[in-house]
Length: 187
Image 1 (cartoon, rainbow, N blue to C red):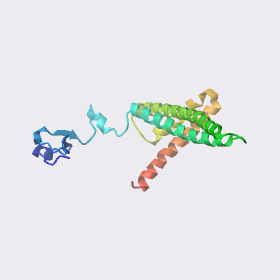
Image 2: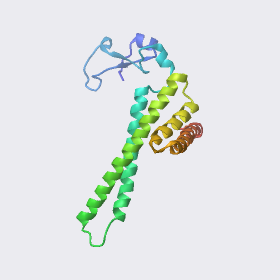
Image 3: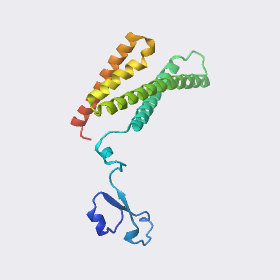
């Protein structure tokens, strides 16, 4: 932070002074310092009232974390599968090749599947939040129901209904767990 504060900075608590050359001992007047906002900037004031991510941020977040988590979990399962497929007399090179092949295949497969689930969930959640103009537990439960049903729709109505119910229960459990964690774990 800058060492010298101007009087107009003290009157406006929503900005902070930024001195780009503060570590270089360059004499610069206080009038050449930049005033940076301390809170996020919004184009419209209505956007600042909503405490949630936009649909694009949701889409990127859920798809990316789903793909990353699925890839790591799939690679871990692939390593175990590769180790179990060792045969007597395999060289070290062949063992490493089996592990890499099985972990790469399982990582890609799991990552793509869970990434698609995140993509569907983000789309449905953003759509429900836009229609109802609320972002609560029921929005997440409806998004989980829809995600499970859409993801398993190709396997038939019964499979879609079961997956939808499991998706709704899982989404509700995650949201409830998040609220319990916020309440009791003071981080």
